[in-house]
Image 1 (cartoon, rainbow over the protein chains, first blue to last red):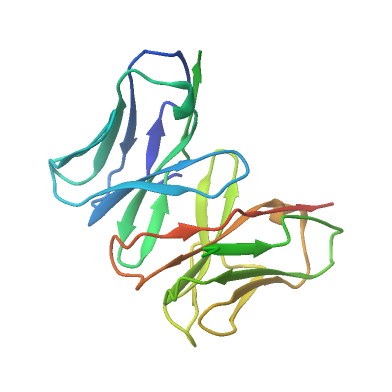
Image 2: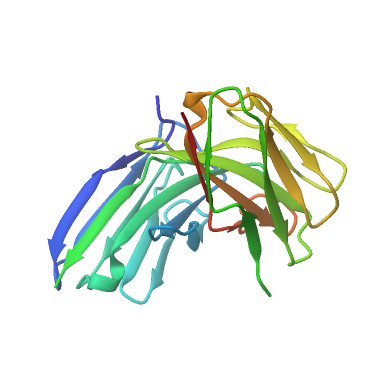
Length: 109
Length: 114
């Protein structure tokens, strides 16, 4: 059983569309991180959210941490082909990360 | 700076063979990690080293051993490979290993055990 559930597992959209990826858990985390991974490479950190209710923006990407610090969402506005990749959320527990299974995003031009 | 480097990039083993995956970082980080990534499972922590001279088990340590050779290098050894160990292995490092610390990942080693 995955401690962090991500949905959807796969998403295929047209360039210019908006999308939201969800990361849910029954457990509380001290903070939560979002990573992006491209084929043949390791994950790269996008953002860390720490405070319940926190919202962070990174250009067209908006990250939100739930009030209870159990869930998070990633919203992409006007998706571009360069956004294609695997998006992973990771809950922080002390010095360890607990990863979700990931959402594969494909943006078609 | 090369960041985190891993060797080899690809490896095919037969059941029962042994091998060592190498990882090195040039960022003067204290903490290093080994993960495996399987389809539909995300990344799972195998072992980690909070600082030079210390190692601890993660979520899935069975069948693996590690060595923190020095501050730069952290190796992962499979003593007797099994098909269930077919996976992509990632090494990562972070400055302190503290809560929310950024982990920097290597490019991965794709291992197939026949």
